[in-house]
Length: 259
Image (cartoon, helix red, strand yellow):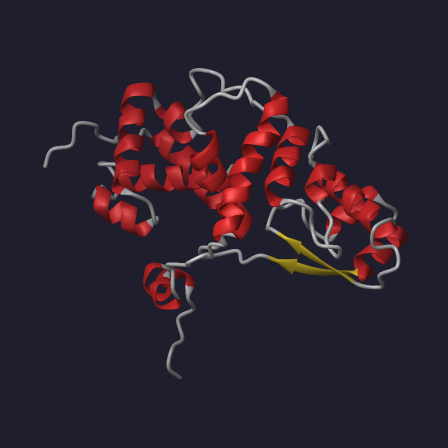
């Protein structure tokens, strides 16, 4: 099958791609684009789209799109991240509004928990120091009497022990870190929490395809939906089983070689 968009890199363009790959310059996506361009070069390896997609764990359509962008928009546009032609859609709610919406649906937390989202959402920035300051405030107030606190975090690069050393002196940072038992969610595989599932149901069943013009009316609408949902007491039926994971996520499992 003849390709409509042919990748033919100049010596200078090959050098740029090789430098990106060798030194891992830029984002992981930029490195992958450089690798794809190098392998698709007809004056080089000239790999097929299917072979490139398998080698770099991407879709064939991704390779086709990158070839087209190179020919139509040029090398720079193909290697760098594509810029939006129009600005993104303005946010309908700020961080505080999002926190209030989540709180209305999920209800009052148990006595041992605290809605941290309400505290962090009000900040204009969310750097490592911002995160450390919020956690420290919880340790000094809500959990002041707790010698050890289990903190469940996702894998954002701001959620680290080092964040405390950016916000406090080493002595103070160490004191906070010693009180925290960090528990990170899995880095790989498929995981969803029940709150995210419920918020998705709230959006599709109560808020989609309609406009609520007054903020005062929103709690009432959500409350009606929540009462009906809670009355059903439906559970969560996880369809993704361990056996499925071992097949679909095979590349994430370690390979044990016989000795």
